[in-house]
Every structure is written in structure tokens, then in C-alpha cells.
Length: 145
Image (cartoon, rainbow, N blue to C red; front, top):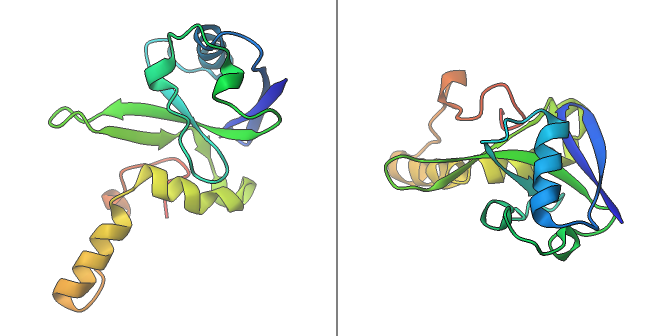
């Protein structure tokens, strides 16, 4: 039983999911070059986040959360200091070229309020506000527009 993790510049690695989650997450961070202190999560091709962060120390099998032979995108998880809200940053770069089918699901996960902000701006002002490159919260990754 295995899954494919997508990350970096079009890199992919196979991972065994017939192991405890605590070992799976540790191996994931090591092989993908993520600092062991950082929090990570995975997103499936439909845009659903697995929520590894809350179960990363679990002794349940990784197969209890992950579907066999599925592709997942590696995400870095950070928390907002003011309200503790989770923020996801894709660790898969150049999605538009390597995996264009994942561009929209990643945009929704990395910038969940962006669509809501645009709709609100168009209703209030009669048009959609344009944002420059500095306005994107996920620079240097797939969440860029």
C-alpha cells in the first residue's frame, strides 16, 4: 500500500501507508526536505486537506487517513499569531506547468478568503479589486495566480 506525494519542482515520492502515522509524518518530512519542527499536511486532488497536523503523533496506521495509490500535495501549515487560524502553503511549485489540474484546488486551500473578498468587493464597489503580486500570500509557490 502506497501513496505518491507531490512537492518541490515537480518532484514526487512514493510512501508506504502501512505504518503508524507518527512514523509516516517523520519520514515524509525527512524525504521531502522539511524541517522536523515544521507542521505539514496533505491535500488530495479534490482539494480536501487530510488534517495530518492533529494526528501526527498518532499510532493509528497512515492508511486510516490516506487512500491507497492516491496522489497528495505536500502543504506546510502555519498558524496566525492573532487568532490561531491555520494557513496552508503549497510545497509543490510551478503547478500551472506540472499539474494544472491542481491549480484551482490549491488556490482554494491556500487562499480560502480570496474568492469571498473578490465577491464582497464587487458588490460594494461595483467591480473587482485588482491585487498586485505583493498581495498574494503564497509567494514562490503554486498558490500564485
